Length: 174
Image 1 (cartoon, one colour):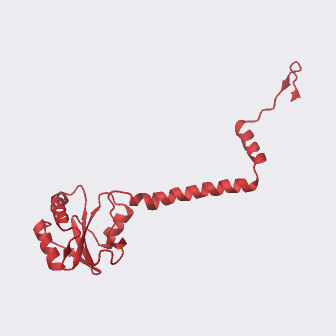
Image 2: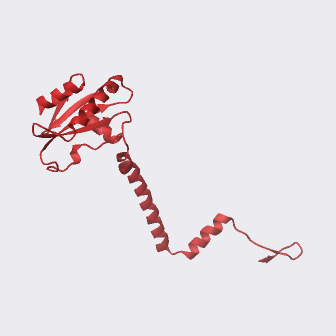
């Protein structure tokens, strides 16, 4: 406190709130403590970035994992995966979807000519990085696109997607 020129009343030197706070922190913490706090903050930033770029897109309902992630031999035989690439706004996709669901309900996990059939729906309406990667891998240029993956080969389906033609396709190719 110092003497004031106004009638001998003491005056206080008050620092701004932020200035005072940082000076107290600097006086009460060692450099090691500050380093640990900065490391924790950096870890949190990296964790949030990783979650947003890697984990959150996989939780997207339009993304469905395909058989690339299934260990070989887990089904006890050869596998064939039938992929349907579609979008919500396409009238042809809307017509093909009930046929696809009917075929999927009948043949999902069943064995045809020694191959276990797996069906994968790929909704391309919202192109996430995973969906975009699948579209580029299988060269999808229009909708609906149906591809069969068998023994390392990609076989393109090029007829009208009805349950009868899809069944014939599976029986002839497998």
